[in-house]
Image 1: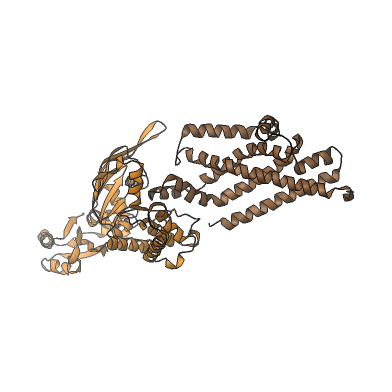
Image 2: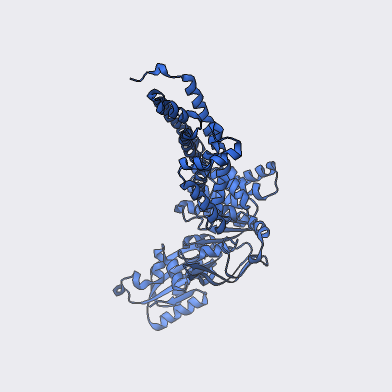
Length: 220
Length: 341
């Protein structure tokens, strides 16, 4: 039987808060870097508005390299960079740079694909009206892509939750850290069960909220 | 207004040169409705897109009001395109914007009107295309015909002098097609707008166009007034386009296939005529002058745009002299006739 009386609920609440902060802040920076990168990938690709084959190849290569490094290894490789950036590689702050580096290229690729799904005819219609490229991108394409972009953000947020939990391995904070230190290293199965249950609930909530938003902004 | 001179376009596909347009020369007048008809892949879409440089021609010139647009830089091209409207087969509306938002979009991006003037222009355009009640709907809530009306309003927003129609009715049912064609004709007359359209449907050309060019394999194989091309198609492609979906005309162009040969004894003659003569009792007049007898095998009296016309397939029976007299009378009344067999 699982004995819940042993559990320090205060610790769990704090760890949940830390997970939310890590995910939230990382998501913010992931969008900050990933969205422009995704747009750039799309517009510079073959046959698109600002076709630049060389630039596309370079960007695409970098994205692929970052996406092919396993997250656990990226966490370790990033330690010196993180120390330079924010002074520590530990705790909630220390987890954020590797999280962003891991998910921004992933998000960028999702953004590129969402934009690619937009009917080519819409771009042609805008061009035929003599509308400038930056207005086509920001005034027509992004609003058209909004439901897809929200869905991509949802997927990315969920990926971040699981990555954030993994950062517990190298001393990041949050539910993952709690699960490893108490649930695994001190054999408190109850803590493990509860952290996993909380992660499941978090993921469900994010997916549900994302789906609702997508539906709200879909005009088709 | 538009002069296309020796226009060619070649693509490189896997190292091979593919010719999409081959030495096209055309002239389109101000206020004219000009149709380009051809099968799919004939090059009509490339030709239409050369008029606003969505396609860059490889060689040749496109002159609009005397200026060769193929040499335009980015800025001049943007300004030019703002004065050329375009509508599309699949409408290409912005699904995230309302009907009013779609019409406002080119005004907001290109015009120099303030918000109040733009709103005024949008409601003017909505009234023009008959969609005033649907201003706040999204395109997904509209029927195909209504979507194309939004497309037309959007294309007219910046008061263009030229409207390009890319298979604008090909995705619509026949009834809706007719209502869109009527709207385009109305706009052409009221605003004096020049319209260039491409289509694969002869019916569209008959309803809307003043002149037509038939394109095949990237070349113009025939062009002229719609009535002339329609009633007297010379090129095989034109003949098949005219006959397509029109069994009546098909039978008249090729009676050997349409009628049982053993039933036919006399001379088969096809008469065609245009204009006021359509309303005159020409057959009785002509036959009164001859002892020949006639049977009407096939016939159509209708109009091409506003021009009434008739075409009749007659079987004439009688002596050579009687038939000669009939032909002389036809010539006197300026009725075109050709002996088919």
